[in-house]
Each structure stands twice: as C-alpha cells, then as structure tokens.
Image (tube, rainbow, N blue to C red):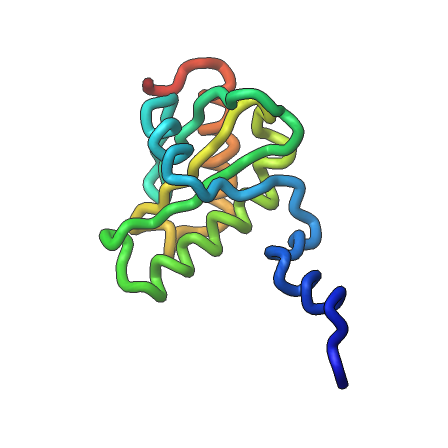
Length: 135
C-alpha cells in the first residue's frame, strides 16, 4: 500500500489527541520552573504544584514528573501513568482552569491505593483553590 503525502504528513504532525482527555500536557522546562515557585500541597504519593497561567485559559494544562528517587525507569513510568489516570478522573472537574498544575510523583505513587490517591488529590486541589496551600 502506498502512502500519499497527505497521510504521511498527518502521521508526522504531532501526537494525536487522547480520547477523553480535556487537558493538555506541559512540556517546557520554563513552565515547570514557574510552577515550582507557586502554591504546593504534598501527599505521601505526590506533590501538586499550581501557579496562575499567563494569557490563554482555554484548556487545563498539567505537567507530570518523577525523579530517580521514585525508582528505576519502569517505576517512574508507572508512577507517571498513575498520575495521568488521576488527572483524567479528578482534574477535569476539580481543577481551576486559570491555573497550571504539575503533579510530582513520590516513592509511594507506585504502590499506594488508587482510591486513596484520588481522595488526596481532591483534597489538595480544594486547599489550593481556597488559597490554603503552602507557597
């Protein structure tokens, strides 16, 4: 089967939108550094960082990170997958679209009960929304 140039360019234009996701992923280091100085709330499995967004408020933007302290590459990738699943379930309804967020995985993110993590994320977002998070 021969590919025409339109099919090839659509395949190379970038990642396809993931079904069901209404947020976009932060990729630039400058965004992560900006959020590191914002509000934060920590739980045993992750830390939530938030800061006001500059400009456009169209879609929720979330970044994910896991340091080598979390474990080897397999553990870090699993932790980030679990954080993305949390974002799919919680962030779309509980997060403020005027803020950017970063979820930083901690060691417990790999093994902690998912329902507990979900409850902790809801509480952390509520505290950030009330302005009671640590700066």
